[in-house]
Image (cartoon, rainbow over all chains, first blue to last red; front, side, top):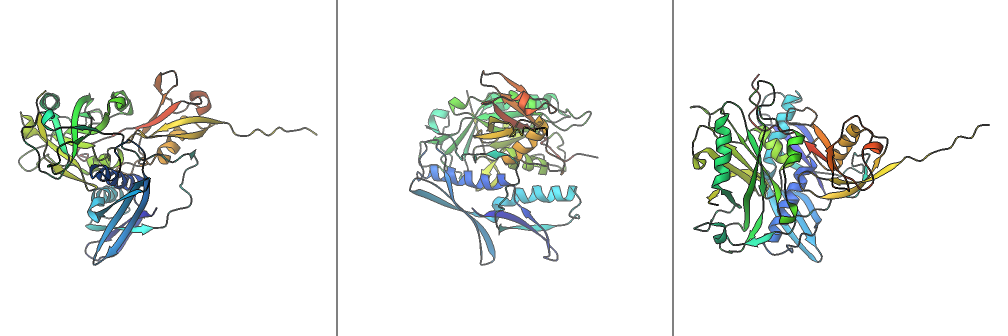
Length: 314
Length: 104
C-alpha cells in the first residue's frame, strides 16, 4: 500500500515549502469511505467483516492529482477515486499546526498529495497485530418508518435528528450562552431500503450525551476530558456508534456567522471522528429553534461538508 | 565466579481498542513500561494523532476494561505489569477541544 505525503507550496512563488507524511487516520478515512461506498453499491457484503486494502495510490496527470483506493473481500474488489480535495481538511489542520510551531510563516499555501515509499519501520516499539478494517453490519430500514414525509434527494447521507434531542442541545447551549457547550452524539447508522434516494446511508442520532463546558479556567472554550468521553454509553450490540460531536459557537455577531467548522473542529473530526457516519453539529445559541440554530457537517468523498439534516419527531 | 541469571523481558498480552473505530487487536505490552509510556506507544500504534492542532502533545488517558467487567482509568505513573493483566482491554481516550481559536 502506498503511503501519501502532503506537499505544501507557497501560492505566490509556487515554491515547495513543506513535505511530510499524511497522518494514518487520513488514509484510514478514505479506506472506510470506499468500504462504505462498496457496501451501499452492493459490491461488498454488508456482513460486518473486515476488508483488505487492494490499492491506495496517487495518480497525477493532466494538471490534477487523484487518489485511488480499492478495498476487497474474497474475490470482489471495489475502487473509488478521490480528488485531492478529499485531503483539504487534513491540509488545513497541517498548516495550522505548522504555523503554531513556527515552521511556516503566515501566508497562503496550496497543497497536493504525493506518493511516498512506505517506511520499513512503522515507528512503534509495540508488537501488535494490524487492526481489522470493518464498519460493522448495518441494519436496513425504511426512511418512511423513520418519520420522513418525503425522500431526500441530496447525495449526502440522510441525517435524522430527533427534535427533542435538538431542542435539548439548544437549551443547553442557550443556558450558557457565553461559553461553549457540547455533547457526544450516539448514532445507529443504517442502509436506506428505498433505492430512489441520493445516498443510501442513514444516520439517525439516537442519543445525546451532554458534556461539561468552559472548563479552561475563565475561558469560554470547551474542553472534553478523556473521562467524559469514557462515560458515554454506546450499545455496540445494537449497532450504535459514537457518532461525533455537537458543540456551540457562542460568538456570533453581525460580522461573524458561527455556522462553520474551525481548524480545531476539523482537527478533531479528522483525528477522532472520521468514519463515514460520524458527523459534527454546530449550535448558534442566538437562535431559539433548532432549524435556525443547528448546522450539520458530514463526510462527503473524504471531505467535511455542510449538509442539510432532518428533524424528526419521536 | 558468580553466575548471573538472564531473565527475558516480561510481556502482558492485552487487547487494544481504537477510539474511532472500536476495532480491537492483540498486543504484547512490556510489563516494565509505565502507563504513560504505554499510552504514547499504543496511541501511536493505533493511528491516533500525536499532536493537536496547536502542535502540543495530544493528551490521552489510558482506560482498562478488565475481564471481570470492571473498568478504570490508569494512573500515568503506574507500571503496566502491575496495572494490566493478561486479557485486559486497554483504550487510550483523547482529550478533545473543539471550538473557535483561542483569543489571546
